Length: 133
Image (cartoon, rainbow, N blue to C red):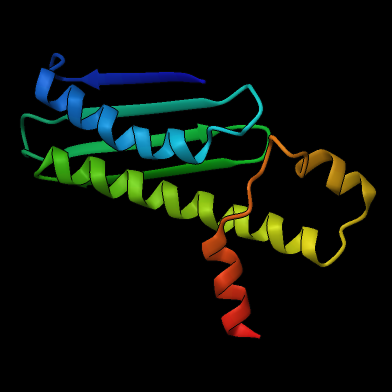
């Protein structure tokens, strides 16, 4: 897994670095069974003139491609927001893959996406599907 965190307009800050690592840990846990290459790229832009900060994050893996950005006055809240948005995108994409697999996507699909160490099926997703039926 390759992570790249870029700060624009300001130097690194230990408190901010810890917060980013904590938030990215959530994404790393989600992607722990994903095959390489896995890229996480975060850009934190500080704007001195209008006191707004822009945070963007891009995730690229063999199965997922997600992007989110948000702008606001509190950089910590902006980081939380983009990580939350990307996490939801990842969950939605995973649910689509699981749903496709359950409805019989064919041998090619199963071998490409559902090897034992590639994709875990969340118990929460299974419970939600059972409630809908």
